[in-house]
Length: 507
Image 1 (tube, one colour):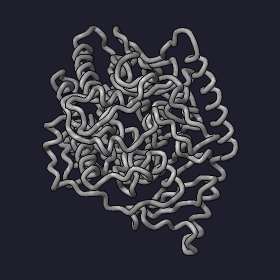
Image 2 (cartoon, one colour):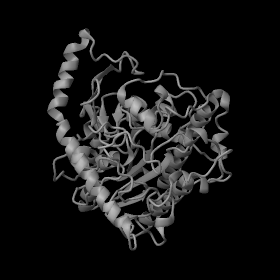
Image 3 (cartoon, helix red, strand yellow):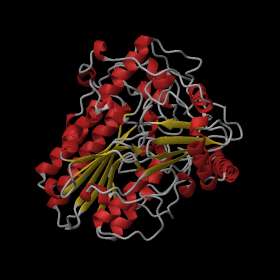
Image 4 (spheres, helix red, strand yellow):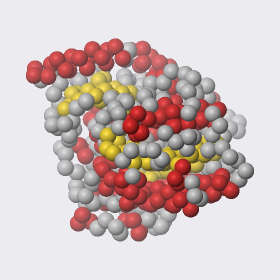
């Protein structure tokens, strides 16, 4: 293994690997990710640990599960007392930099990064707190809905495009600034981009890459398990039925934004090469979760089905083998992996396992992915996943179990839970789930957290001057992108030009 390489980690938002050329999609063009995978390791069974932005990213940063970080949802406080890989690498002599999105909730907007180049794209306060005492209630200001599907199409600019352009520009500039400075520390930078997250609104040049006749409609039938029904209702997909033309446009916009994200990867790789440090830099590309994109009549995330739960994971750099690994792993494994890249020892217990033996020697180091979902559309209890070997098991205290053999049933069409022929494997997973998760205790902890955060939020908003926690470079970040005092759909419409056909402002 090379001595103390630079580490550049690029994280997409809501990028399902199934919709990249790198992972075999016949239409979507991702040449930069393809080239990275061609000279490194591609993980074909990498998963998030919670299919929602903030809890997934907290798990990624700490190497700990959501029930350990207590970052349960998109408005759960990410405690500044939790060590992250950024703390560990900074303590071991790395320059640690964040450019772009990481969806930190709470007043600490650094979490071990010495320098942050941008604000975040979403609010850092408690306004997006769900309510497990009334889990079916929608909070329309910030809940997903079908607007992104119905209003997909090209635009000259959006808040997401502006954000990713800024994050990429500042990251490129920082790469050059670092190599031209007197700082001889190796560089560890995380670049968090917003695309291809909905709204599905790309620049025209990317939209034009995908004519309508190459866009296939979703191929899998509607899922009918209780959690899928809750997600569908939570996103208003049960009451607002998108037309085939709208679905095709949404998928076209998403494909276009996958190519846009890939172009940003190319810009970062070009900067590393132009700065003459690519040969001593490990580059990692991944995402916080995927996107169902209409498969099983589900949109966005929040599900443990493959399109939502799997993430791309590609690593390339000095010493990394050219190979494909199909053994399950997860974002939890990146923290111990980065520590080992840097020669740093973990000083606290981690739930993840280092992937260094895999990427440098082709050995199997991690064999499973474990996930916990404790946010909106859950029924007041966690919805959890175990992925091991060919099997995926989904557990929730109020729902029937789900068991899939992904080797023979990659589209997860045949739930084998309750099948007598698979009773032994189902019972083994059920016993493991009972040992791993105390559902009632987790429910109590989550509800307590939600109630405490709601009180704090109400107090902060009740009178006087609201003190924003949003990270502020030298400008007023509280008015940029999407913030708590805005309806995100209004912000999306306000920053999109030309406006969506037949769009209307939401009150």
